[in-house]
Length: 445
Image (cartoon, rainbow, N blue to C red):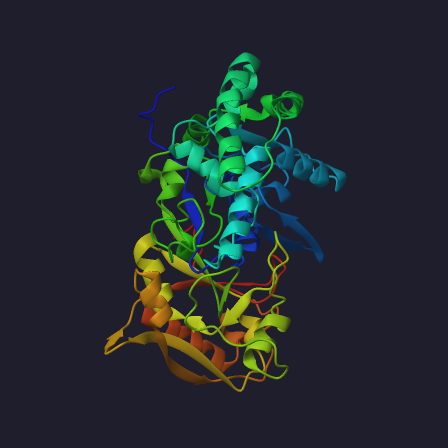
């Protein structure tokens, strides 16, 4: 392979700019019409994308959203932690719906594996935090964090180990001893046995091994042959392990720069960064949320956003906390990711509200700030400063042309764009792939 060949394909990275759940799946699906391949580069099956195509809803957790497009290859990069049992269940569910998956799905040999003891440690730690009064982080309990810990500690079992039973057994023996020690001695849980874990891993290995690949090399080949690639992020920027509201974050880097490290390509191959943001803000789980609104009382804005927006987590089913758009937090995400343009989603959820508010900064003690602070304790102390806009009574649902939007909706979007300093290139006005206003095409800019 000549790595010096000039890549002729164009690549786009899609990342969430809030606390996840921004509607990335629909946007990735829409853009895949122009891509030869879709790559997932971080996270695990703690993330979820819900797609609505011709009125039919499909939920994906680990497999890239591009799988819904015939002829598009999908890659799970080395930055993803993989639960092989869950992966096969997801494949089987898609196959039952009539999709061809295994011939189009490639998994990096370097992906760390999530195994049963990771799940047990994850859940036991959350339970201990809750019972001790410290407060839960709000994990999904799927073993994501403990699996990433093993990766960083250089003791992880990786997908490539599935090809070598003796090597797998030796590593599993050492790793299980460590986690059982923590489970019993610190978390007061029950130890797990070696043989059932090993036997099941070897069973699923027979199905996983044909899909293992050198993902970085394959992506490079797609570009050299003129194909474009779409890099699909999970979660959102404000959940990033380094740049989010630590410690109320996920265990991986959700930002655009990790598309390179998490898939095995150079950063020069990331040509356009598309940030996804809702027209308002949501968050699942614990952690600071300056613009959060109460949701229990019918007739309130919070209740409207929650019910009209159908705000429940794709993976957990937990109700999402809802609030006004936090443009000061969005400004932080623009900075971190180097956003080329935004896609604003769920605009139609704001239809019918008498007024719309947007957070443009915070009162933090005696100081005013116009960008989200870095310290979670400071964020908790922040009092949002709002600009207020008149709402609209007309429907925006399904609108596909900018000029057909209500005047007040256009003015709201124009103000968002001006404040954050990045262009809005797309607007999503409904869940279906066709409910989209295109102002600038990420693959044609």
